[in-house]
Amino acid sequence: MDELRQKYLGAISEVADEAALEYLRVQAVGKKGEISLKMRELGKMTPEERQVAGPALNALKDEINSALAAKKAALADAALDARLRTEWLDVTLPGRARPQGTIHPISQVMEEVTAIFADMGFSVAEGPQIDSDWYNFDALNIPEHHPARGEMDTFYMHRDESDNRPPHVLRTHTSPVQIRTMEVQGAPLRVIAPGRVYRADYDQTHTPMFNQVEGLAIDTDISMANLKWVLEEFVRAYFEVDTVELRFRASHFPFTEPSAEVDLRCSWEGGQLKVGEGDDWMEILGSGMVHPKVLEAGKIDPAKYQGFAFGMGIDRIAMLKYGIPDLRAFFDSDLRWLRHYGFSALDVPTLHQGLSR
Ligand code: PHE
Image (cartoon, rainbow, N blue to C red; front, side):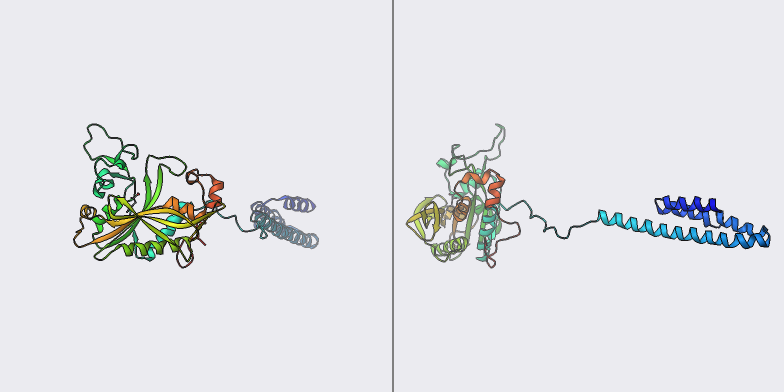
């Protein structure tokens, strides 16, 4: 019996998992276990022998059973401990760092512009960045030999000699979207068309790709006065100031008649730009009443409808609003610059919550 005690108590104390422990339990006190077999032998003993062996065997059985139970509890505790260690959580850690990415100032400004014009009933139209020279020039009343059509200024797509499709260009302005929208929507209509445009130009204030937003409103009773109100309203909302002053300068575009370039009153003091006050003027857009030939190209009857159109440089107004001195930084993908000028992805510009907060 001493041998059995030592054998099982020793084994139980060394067991490492519950399956091995169960195996030991069956070996010792299971139906056919060693202790149970010994108990069966009691019947063959003399009454005197039985009186000694019986209680001793029972005591041994109890001792092994309680060792098994204690070990089982210890193994369960250890398993819980191990699990708690792997699932450890430091509740004193600060919240997770915010995402690294930011919204590029150009994207931000496009969202702001869209929000403002949406409030005035303009929807957003789009057109292809590679367009035929008909949409980019002819339909807009830009004649064959206009300097803008020269290879000096315009990126022409490569064409094989045998290719008889019309020549295609990287659009030099967003104005071709005027024609496409007229074709699809007819009159009346009210749209803006923000997007990328391309010109063969590169210096401190020009990049070969830049961004414009086109505006177009067509109805039976549209005048220059509507154009002026819409632009003043836009500039006030965009720069988030109460007073703005715009100057309409007579100008020329083949696709508008009359045409005006629009300047914004501003001041440059100590390199700091202020909008709405001062003695300086900054040109921000071209505009005018849509030329009858352009309405015709868009299949709209110029005897019945008129409209205004404007085209504004998004990069320019982004630089003005956010104090960005060099246009080329927009395209450098410098993370330090983006973190400085970028906007949180969660702050969607709206008129009621504030455009840029
Ligand atoms: N398309 C002209 C430009 O790129 C801007 C413009 C648009 C002028 C619409 C008048 C009307 O300079």
